[in-house]
Image (cartoon, rainbow, N blue to C red; front, top):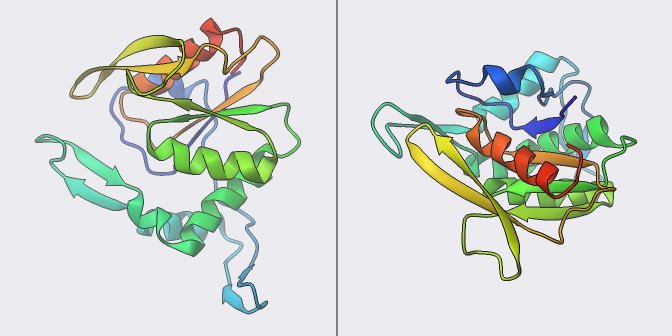
Length: 193
C-alpha cells in the first residue's frame, strides 16, 4: 500500500491508477491555533468539511495556465496564509506521526515547502526530487508524462537506502505522472513508498 500526501485540491484527469494506491489529506479534528503570546488566531470547526473548505478557499485557480484548457491550482496563496499552512501541516503531522516513515521526498518545487515543514515537524529526513541538472551529485532519474508534455525528475543516488520507508509529497495530482515517477525512483534506489 502506498501513502502519498497530496494537497487537497486535485484535478480529475487520468489519476485512476494512483487513486487506488494513495491516501489523501483530510483535515478533520484540527486544533485551535495561537500566536506566540497565546492569543487565539482562529477558532476552527471540528467539522471536516469546514476545514477542507477553509484550505480550498486559500488555493487560487488560474484558468488556461500553463496552456489553454488547464485549470492550474496555485498553492502560493495557501502557503502565505499562516492558518491555512498550519491546517495542512498539522493535519499531515497528525496523520503520519507514529508511522514507520523515516524520509519524505518532496517533489519540485512546492513539494519542497510542505515536505520540508513536515520533515521538521516529524523529525525525519527530507529528500528533494528535482528537475534534471539541479542536483550536484550522482542522480537517478525517471521520465514521466504531463498533461501538457513530458518531463523528468531526479533524486541523489545516496538519498534513499533499502531501509527507508518514504512518504512522497506533491502539491497536486494531475495525470499522476510525477507521483509515479517519484515512486519508481524511490523503488529503484531500494526504498519503500
